[in-house]
Image (tube, rainbow, N blue to C red; front, side, top):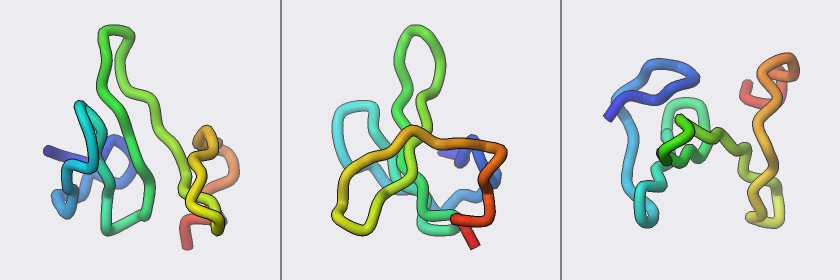
Length: 58
């Protein structure tokens, strides 16, 4: 499984059709509509990924 954000292979399954990328620290979910990408907030909640604000991934 490749990460849709960074293309890395350091991904792991965390739920049903839900994955986490250890390289860029995002969580993503595959469904019929495509891929949903989330950032993990400090409190552990999922926040919709904003590709224009990638500074938070560094």
